[in-house]
Length: 79
Image 1 (cartoon, rainbow, N blue to C red):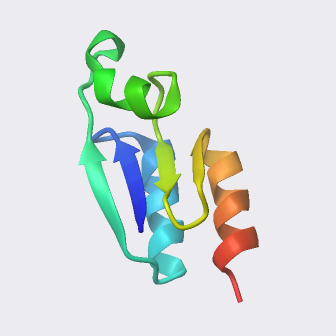
Image 2: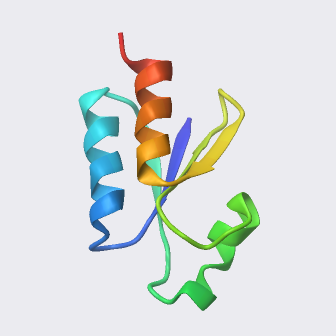
């Protein structure tokens, strides 16, 4: 299962959402606070407060930065 930590209105998060949907992957969204200082849940799972963050339990991967996430998704799930 893939979990996406995201922020409403974040264009980088939406790029990741688009790719997840293109790849027809099931995922859970965790909506985070707008203020960096309030993003404690993201910090707990990834060690930092920026979004997007993807956690892929099946692959044992937690990562941030949309470009890295897109590369990972393509490498792992694209046919």
